Length: 159
Image (cartoon, rainbow, N blue to C red; front, side, top):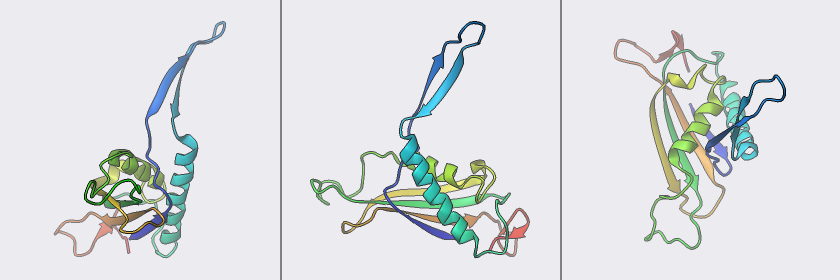
């Protein structure tokens, strides 16, 4: 299965945690917040919507139970101040691992029950050849070995 999500990719970001002291006889409580919560929520909703649209064309209801191979390519605009010669690939923020985490979390509960089911990840960041809409390309393949005559996920044919 292949998906394309149009829009600037948003990284999962770093979580910040702090403790709120308890009042009176209440215990203190820990609070964890994302530094880009609003943009991340919008981005993950876009990813989820594209996945649901793609799944509507299949005969097997998700989420699936088996292992997955995931490939992701983030296509970003090159800053005007940066030449192809100076920086052929985006070696600056956003960090690739944080971009990937946002994608895997967005697909949890839609395509798979837990992102621990992803057994192989192939991830790249690339600049667009010409300026245009930034995007994410996702390729999903169910993992299978030579003992199967066709790829399956959780014992069910995936496509």
